[in-house]
Amino acid sequence: MDTSIDTIIRILVPLLIIALGHYIDHSEPEAEFNFSSVSFSHQEPVRDFMEREVRAGVKYYIVPVLFVRGAFGGCALTLGQQMNGTQCPSQVVEVPVDKMRGLPMTFTHVHGNGRVIRLSTDLNIQVSAKSACKRSSMVWRLADYVEPERRWFIEMGGAKGNLETNQTIRARFKIEKFVYDRDGYRSGHKLVYCPDVCETCKAICMDIGIYSGTDGVRRLALVDNYQVQPLRVAFLPSDWL
Image 1 (cartoon, rainbow, N blue to C red):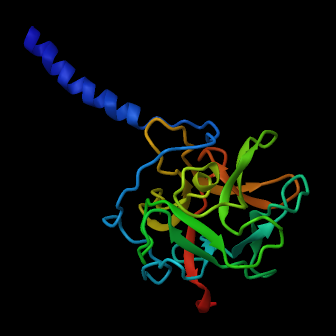
Image 2 (image 1 turned 135 degrees about the vertical axis):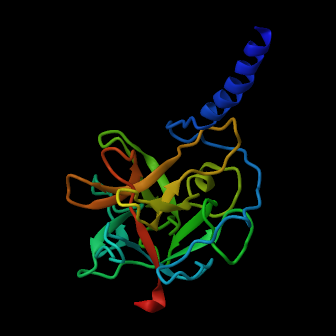
């Protein structure tokens, strides 16, 4: 009998540890975090629409992709005002490409300075354009929680680097593979906010998608994968268009 109990304990304890490890705290980020730098050189490279490795510092258009094999979405990412009409800091929005091409972006590593951008690693994303807002950088960051819409939007004003500050933590994003399994077809990537911080720190960990506001503007925001799905994207070098 004792042997059976010991066997059950040896099976259940690891399963409980794994289950707890998948717990996600969706509360707003704390003012400061602690973290340790980790080497991610073993991670798979992010690839552009021609299957070439995405490179740090190179300008890319982030292009939404339709749920059709090989088809691009006909929309582009640019900057727009907030839902309350505030112009600064600007938020990342989606517009039809027949109106404008959108703005190119660059990626840089938070940890290290390798040339290749890799999956599941903390990155800074910067818009390659001059800021129209004083005292606001062109680096993506997670905006404050908006209560009426119950959303975190993506805006400008982030800080690059790995210092232990609220602004640097809010400016860390990841690129992951997008998986669409309805017909077994897998293609594209998705953007994620899930910064690497210490185990005792609180951090949001959610996909990024499009939220259609009451003003008709389609803004990038953290999504719950239920009411709003993550945005599937491809990366086009700016000199290709």
